[in-house]
Image 1 (tube, rainbow, N blue to C red):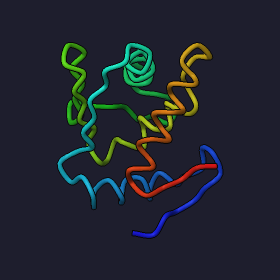
Image 2: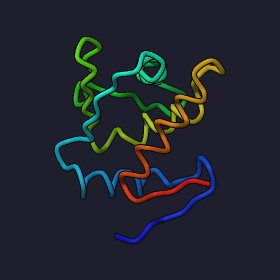
Image 3: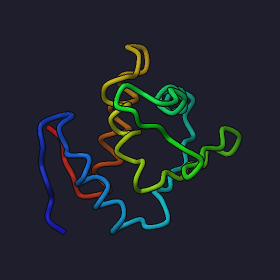
Image 4: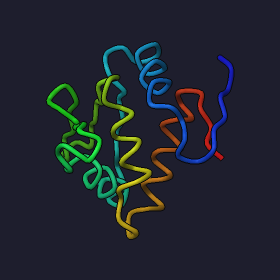
Length: 111
């Protein structure tokens, strides 16, 4: 798989969706153990319908007790955009780190 490189925050949503569908057709699985990372995920997750008229729906799941998350391929770009754009300053480092890590597993680097 060829590495794809983009400027920070500019990976096309269509590419994220396509890569997730290809590599994780049943959803992008994660286990979040750190409290600060969980706060960043929760802040991004709990926005409801956002200014892009998109949301994380029941197709995706997050269990705060176990830390288990599964993001539907068609919704991963929403979570990643929110981790980049919409997290508060207090969660920004964790949010950007999570975004970078997720993209890295899909073969995408943002610099």
